[in-house]
Length: 128
Image (cartoon, rainbow, N blue to C red):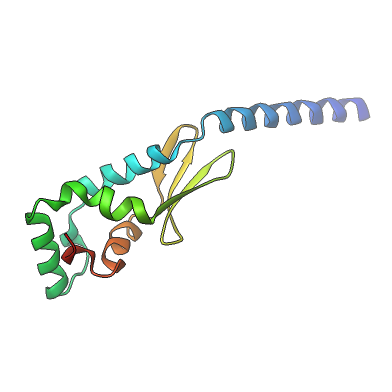
């Protein structure tokens, strides 16, 4: 009976070790996380969030000025960080987890935080 338990434990350890190797090799990069955030922002409609009149006017002026193409470089990238835990990674904006990366995939885990972070960044839309 002890030999059977030892064999089962050894198999489980080998499976978990193999899984850890695969996870570490397929851990997404920072650019993978940023690409997912960029895709999300390209599809996001800011009218979905509750903006007061001043914020709405700032957002409209900012987007109509053509600055929306630079929003990733000027706004998101400076406040975006990726914490790499070896087997997986977590993308953060303002110390709040927004993306999770594992097995070569990145998922948005807090959709509401991304646009909120853009607005909370000190009235970002009035800066060109």
